[in-house]
Length: 273
Image (cartoon, rainbow, N blue to C red; front, side):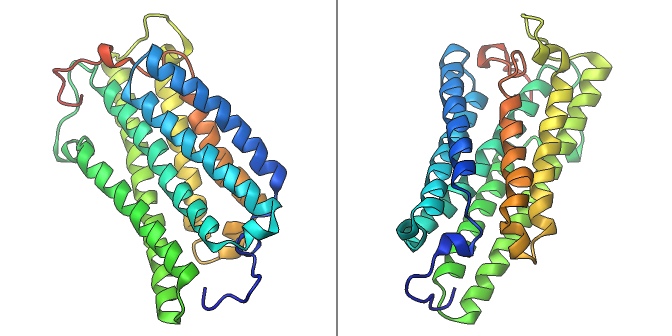
């Protein structure tokens, strides 16, 4: 934003207005954070640790969002607003990588896991982390350039970087959705992970994973659809149900008993592990 006038409220300029909504989401994520931290120690698995990290970032982000909406001085603080943007952009990495990891962990139970060049790429965890990291770094850089840029060329570059980040995230969510269907084919044809407790997650896990993937695709599709319309993208009447709520529902599904196998249960000799 070129030379923002004194007293400019960055929060209101970005559509951040609802204090109650931000508080409600912060409270919910606080409970989820405690729950997943507890699960991380009682049923150790990388997935629960990363989901807990995601909840921590979202809890912190919504606390800052509440302050930006409620306190005018905070809304005018560009450094606090940048902190919010950094935390929010970084957080999506957590829920995406948790979903990706959970799918691979469950594919590892297959007696005859899928093979081929596409599957070889899809199971490369390093490549997926690299793509997500690139999206996060690009989005953060773009946001900062848009906020602090003093020349139109810098602001335009920032806008382009944000669009690139959205498209990278969109491609990653589609890949996760495809992986969920790969897992469905494997589990329907030869069975797969079944929790010893015969819980809902063990019996209907693949359906729950497909729902998670669909929610993530819907979230990113919203950003892609409004990529050239910042006003619509920042509108809280759209942002909360299509961006914030989709994430919340997705992370809530991870709490279903029996969905996430413990680290000790995952076959370590599998090429997908």
